[in-house]
Length: 368
DNA sequence: AATACCCTCAACCGCATGCTT
DNA sequence: CAAGCATGCGGTTGAGGGTAT
Image (cartoon, rainbow, N blue to C red):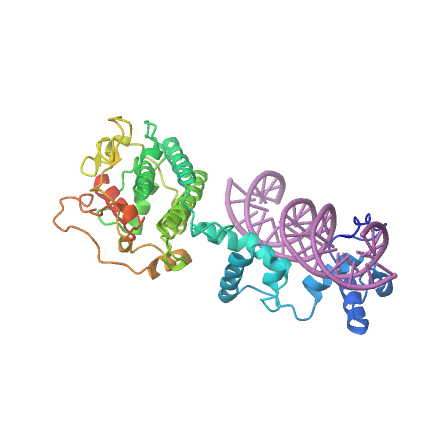
């Protein structure tokens, strides 16, 4: 164990390097090698400490440094190595030619960490995130946001909902209900234009609210993806709709200068009795509150391939389309689309999709 | 156009490690 | 063996650029 580090050298420059300093450092090292870093600054005529020179050289000026974006292979390798080595950035860097530990560390913290979170993977343990408490918090927040938007008035103990994905869809459903509650322009077919018309009718929406919801939605996706044990290229993602399309919708809203007509009565509660049961299923999950609509076991969620065809292409959506899908379990004889959602316990099934198509169809139907 | 906010990443800081004296 | 020294490492910071309001 060495002694404690000295105090900072007196009067040495700190902060960003200038081109002239870089030139001096490169020329000196090319000619003499770096040798003793402590004495290098004096020899090279630099008013820097040796440590600063070493960092500048190893992280930026070294000729063998590879610059530019990380490739997908590099990303995969970093994630793999991190799962084995943890935050041993120098060890990871030694296995990626041309990349520095600092660069990898930064890339991890700014990109890969978030990417894993979106996939429902804990970036520390590299295990799937299945923390129901977190999920509960997310749902609670989501529902609180829905409450703020509109007409949900009954508190919900989401913990009691054993079916997480059902709960996720319920939350989304409720939000969409509120999005469309004021709609006067609805279409019979769920085209993007129709949805634009529907959602644009809302007088109570602000982009900041959308932003909040999208953030929460992302959280939920990560957690649900983790809970379902999906692989990276099987990510169930609604971002294709929720981000890009809502962004588009918001843009359209700006562009069209839509006028709002508040006519709440025109939009019946879309969570109707064909799809919901008042607290009779799942062990009286809402504590016997008869006002609280609850998903029943026969009213599960749409399947993967029911993702709306009008969803615009996005990386996330591309990921979703890679998902190996099964045949839809849609009952063509069902009297309502809602009744056709005959999917058993969603957590027991990987054929789970948090897509929005049926929700959107319901909106269109009820808006008519 | 101005301001606020967010994100990225180069650079810094403090501590650990290993070699030398 | 202990102190001194050089270097490595990982966490953190903050300037600057981009985007949103």
